[in-house]
Image (spheres, rainbow, N blue to C red):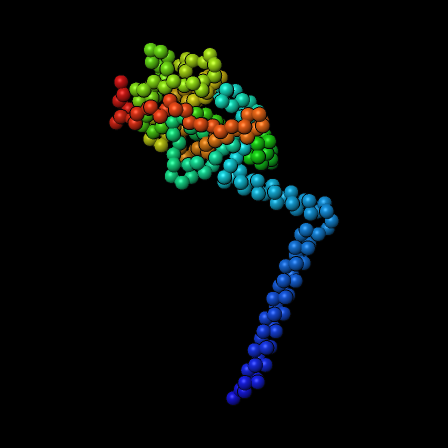
Length: 261
């Protein structure tokens, strides 16, 4: 039968062994960190830069992505060379795009019927640069304004040349000065789960109107939306938020079958 002294000795031996293992693990961790950040100041700078790059790419992939405006199709709301910040969480938790929102979306299957081929290495480098706003976005990515959502009847134009949504004329004060709402007449009921989108510079925008005769009828699937453009982040002189126009607040809900007069 073991005595109290023997039990005490065994406990001390066990604690000593566990302590040695803990110190050994701690020592290995310190050596690993030392190897990672050691090697002089340039290596430490390299590690810091790598960590920052990974953080920025993760932020861009899941939260906010800078988007370089490549053309004048959204003037004067955005100008070529502007960097807008795209909120990728805007529709992540059940909210859906609304009339007047400016969205970035993947146009594959709606605006682009076949994805362009390119060198995989070039595509990877370009994609990383575009993710932080240093290069133009992919050819399949677009930025436009939502004019109609699922069930809406969108037509052009009324007697005063205005676009109507569900029978309600929309005064589009964001249009490029001198532009007509559309030179192309159209009348469409937007399918459920789809969006009718147009550029603010109508005479310089290829948008839903230009794809009416193609698969999808010019509408963009909601699940192809990348995010909502909420801010202009660059240049500094143009820092501002992007707001939903009040005009769309007066548009009624769609009638069954889009049967507005």
